[in-house]
Image (cartoon, rainbow, N blue to C red):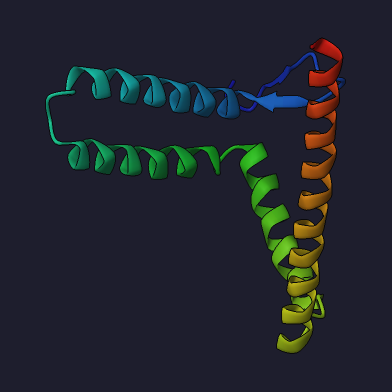
Length: 128
């Protein structure tokens, strides 16, 4: 019965019983983590943070075993492959482009500041 498909309300998507079980376990683990965080509030923050990190790794590991997790892993592998195809700019071009963007941001900030100042002054003149 574990291989039986359960239909969801999302247009023909199917969740296997294994997937549902794993998502329930993930949600239960996160809820337990929240409870434990409050219950052990008097413990050191570093210790609780370490617990959250371990819990996150376990939850991501369990979620990766679901069909959505497998699709996400395939997507990440494909993204990594596509990133290898990107032609990245050389150092000079990157610095030049960064300088131009910074300059335009500064100029636009000054223009917007001037418009804001004029509007503030104009509203002040109308209100007084």
